[in-house]
Picture 1 (cartoon, rainbow over the protein chains, first blue to last red):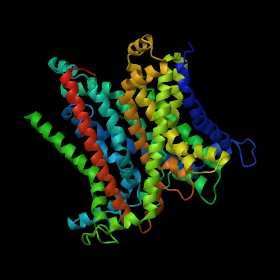
Picture 2: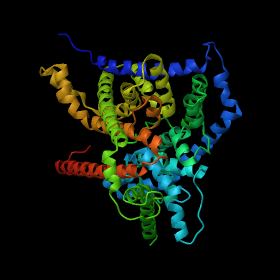
Picture 3: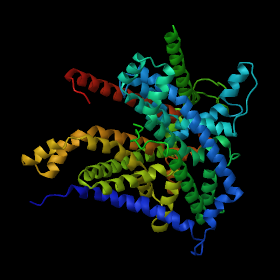
Picture 4: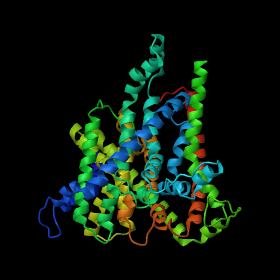
Length: 275
Length: 269
């Protein structure tokens, strides 16, 4: 009776992903390994080792590690406190912490500009308090601050979602058996929230290593990250899409390697999404 | 005693983080009412002139309009495609399923900048950059979020009600529409919402795939923040924030109601 094959429903998606995810990536690879004449070259990919490019890359790597660490150290205790106070997964108190994420990302960054500018809110407050002004604008610290602020919810949510899945009876049982708070944290809470920590770290590290617009807005072009280098390769007067593609491919490789090294420690459990 | 100290410390920490999270937004709001044009850190008196200017500012209003249409359209397309593939995967063999889920991971693991560049290379080679290319780009990078929200619901779903519907003579499409869809609706809704949020918030992908002359909120801010229309942007931020608060309020009331109904009927999820 002409049964419809439900597998066909996957068709449009597969076509879409082939056209707009797989083919574009192939184009990046193709451009990365050719020069303007269309002949094969390794020069573009290898240019990541050129100090002009490797220095920004190393800086990006270090800064995104710091951003990820800051986000983790701030959000893990917060997730624990929220876990204690919230009744269910979608309770208001948790929503309150995700709310800033719904503000446009550029507007949030713009707000930090208002704060950090040399004659901005922070320095006015400091002077009013009788302290010396600090000049954070156009420094790495400003970029780290802005990036950590922007990606904070992406760390908080997965960790929190992993925590609420923990059965509180296990913790009570451990307490009854005489475990101290530290032992409970180390032996129960940390291992059980690991999937959330893994996806949180991924969701902060990957976007922050390739960040370029926060570096523009808060770094004033004085701090040059790998994202800026790639962006310039496509959009400046010296645009070279082959070089840009080569650098993008190298960046992708580095992200994938970082993730592989890092997921090696993950027990292969299903990560908890950010929602 | 120790517990009391711990509780207070926890609460203090909550308040402290909240202050840091909301301070920048609060300062945007305050700045939008500040009459002082040159330095927003100095109070120059209260004014709503920024809001009056905003209504007549075509650059800002166009960007807002583009952002909303783009996010709505892209989230809609992504939700339809993403839901269909999740239903399609039910009857698939394990390896085809993990292949599809693997491809789904690509835009997630790729940083935005690489996704944007890859799509730009495709578009500039085969087409002109336009609103349509922006839409395609947005659908592409938000689709994984839909799949990741819907997929768990499809896996959890009990197929026997669907099969019962078929046995009782429902056509496959009818049974999918009437039985399957309602069951996975929460996943679809949160997928749509997440996709919409991601699209609204995006800068990098839009930046590389946008047509000249079309701006979303993000690219407009990037193009304009050094110039003079800042106050209007602050006013817009305030309006957006109020809308978000309102939406949150509605969502919260709905989930609370649902939770209460659930508690009353004693159903566990």
